[in-house]
Image (cartoon, rainbow, N blue to C red):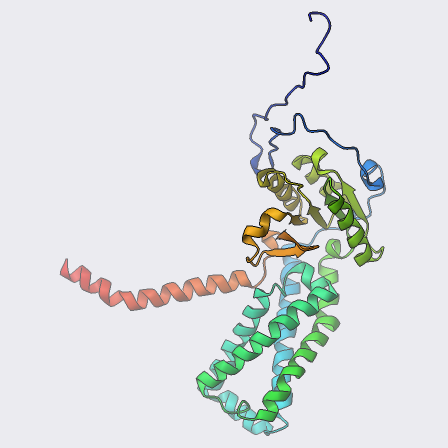
Length: 350
């Protein structure tokens, strides 16, 4: 074989890079003998040479995100308060409402009720950037959280023995539809326009789909049908897109969202690509049947009936981060207060 070069049936196996590359390092083991299909979508073949409509659109900043979330929380609380007050005026006078709110129980209900509504809405991801931009997600998440929050609010009023305005069946019956209506109006008229301004890339940036299967092509068709031509959708083969390459594509094209269809690849490799796109300030969705084992988790949704895990930028967290911190501090303080006498007695005995 000397002088004849490498036989055509010998496959050279690439080795792993030795230098550290963090969580976006590519493990090439398993790709050595895999046949790489050519790009089947016209956007993929010339993606680096086409005009890049999202390249000039900046990603959202943490400051802009805080403004959008603050506006959303204020609008939600004003809508809920207005709904309860307007329906209560059917049965009670303004003086009776002010007297009830001025009592210790009424003040506690107002404070705890505000925290309750924000917590339930946050649990439904009503303050996620994508949810505040989309009309369908807006209504689905906000209205879906309103019913349990409304029920918990009345149970809290019953526990605190607040009769005005919760003792009136007429006021209680009118409060639910009024709350739903005012929440929807506030979200559509105020929150959504503010969110579209605060998240310009999520509103106007193109979408990238990484996959090698027919399901990936169907995802492209479904997304194009939903966005209606207002945003471009590109398809690239996942088998030939390394994590570093994916991150560079997000940076250069300004992709607002990346959908990954792994086609049975190890999740470790898929997550390398997902985190690389997330580091480039793009939202990421991984669509895989391997998520059936955790389909009950809140981070799991579905796309075409297949479980999908959504990744959000950590610097764009909602009020749930503040609520968790508050619960941690309140719980630790209460535990210290309860255990302080016991610890003191142990210290004296020792």
